Amino acid sequence: MPATPPGSGGFSKTRTVLLSAGWALVAGLAASLCATLVMGLLRLLAGIPTPVELFGDFVLKHIDVGTFIRLLKLTNNSKAVPLGQALLGMIAIGTVLGWLYALLVRIKLPARGYRPGRWEWVVGLAFALAMALVATILFWNETPQNFMGWPYTPARVLTILALLLDFVVYGLVLCLGYRFLLPKQPEATTDMAVAQRRQLLARGGVVALGVGAGLGTFGAIQKYLSDYTVYDGMKTAFPKHIVHPITPNNEHYVVTQNPVDPDPDIALWRLELTGLLNKPGSYTYDELQKLPSISRAITLECIANGENDHLIGNAIWHGVPLRTLVEQHGGAQADARYIAFYCIDGFNTTLPLKEVLEADPLLAWNMNGEVLPRRHGYPLRILIPGRYGEENPKWLTRIDFSPDFVNGLYSAQGWYNGILHTMSRIDLPYQDLVIRAGDVVPMTGIAFAGNRGIKRVEVSTDAGNTWKDTTLEPATSKDSWVFWKSSWQPIHAGDYTLMVRATDGTGEVQTTRRQGTVPNGATGFARVKITVH
Ligand SMILES: Nc1nc2c(c(=O)[nH]1)N[C@H]1C(S)=C(S)[C@@H](COP(=O)(O)O)O[C@H]1N2
Ligand SMILES: [Mo]
Image (cartoon, rainbow, N blue to C red):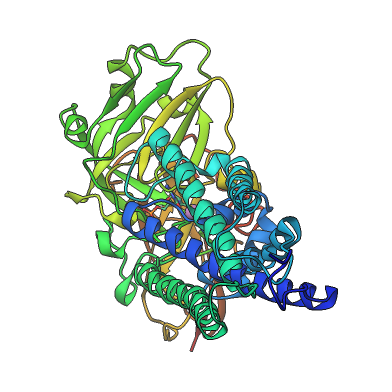
């Protein structure tokens, strides 16, 4: 018996390198696409965040506000485009890693048989474990999220298991695919035609698997994008310049960090109370609703709400006061200085406990008499009077009483996270309104200072030289905006600058210091320029 089968003296070095490199890329691409399909299916069927989303969350917490705003402005599809790029990048890395694999397994060409050797299995598996480990370490803080509603710890376990599965699929397909694709030594016992057909089939099989997984991934992406949060950044509607004291649910502004919002399964969801609380506990949705509950109007304002803008709305929220809940659990322990909120979409915030309890927040499951809408945080969100929207977590699942501050998305980026600034807005008249000298022009607007309330609102029609008191309507609650009313009769044609300023419940007048929304929230008086004809 000859030492090597006939005609298999081995390929030249160049030929071996070229063939190995080429087929390694094909195997790497097929493996990446299979892993991507698994990620997509786990996201759609089990709400498990994909590594692409985890990566996105990770990046967003590691850039500053300036970069964040620049990224936002880069494209008007500010989430889908970077995520798509990250996905392509991941597929590219997975493809190129085929080379590293080929280098490590160093299969002598032509290869012997279709079955991977032990070393190939070891390398394939090592790839899987290394990738899963790197992803777990890197994305550790992002892992406790699940869009189907699993609470913190089960969500973390599921995410990590899914990472492992994704990368094991990658390693397996890489290992088998590469073997299948490589040119083989003819076996002494089979004739050439059969061997060639077999090789063709094996290659066709790997390519078909890759193409199938690619198409499947494409389908999964389509399904995912069909639920895309197109409403993110939607402003509160004011049809015909009429602002309602209570904002209807479908007209309330929306801000979300998510490309696709959670769609929680209420049977899986829990509210957990953990950390330095005398009696930690956990509630199902039904149990929670049996707690003593109240309704209160609370105005919510995004920190990105600029001059005369409408990222602000007022709803009647129904739920259990945080204080009631804390009392039911024997109160917080003495060393609990902070309260940290965790959400099923991976969003989290931390605030000083004392301040939060004093603000009398509400854990709400209803909004304006309806079940809390999905985009506003179903099944549960918290409203913390006196704080900007970014510190009013939606899709809440865990409240942790903590000795330390835990950084969240916006605080990590460097957005202001203090008491919200007093604001006021002019709704009428607006710039395009046609006004003639002698007209009596109604002036209206809102003012808001969180839980400090509003004591006084003044307007100026001469760019701040003289001020006049307005009439305030009763606020819908101590935590809501107030509506102000005045009127103006311009005698002469010309250009006018109208201004408004509010005094909060503590007697402090809105600051004159003008600043934009980024990163500390807008301040200064709102103005409207009017030409009287
Ligand atoms: N879990 C979670 N909570 C969140 C957010 C989010 O993306 N995820 N966005 C915050 C921001 S920036 C704002 S302004 C408010 C908006 O609440 P709304 O969409 O109900 O108006 O929710 C806050 N709570
Ligand atoms: Mo916000």
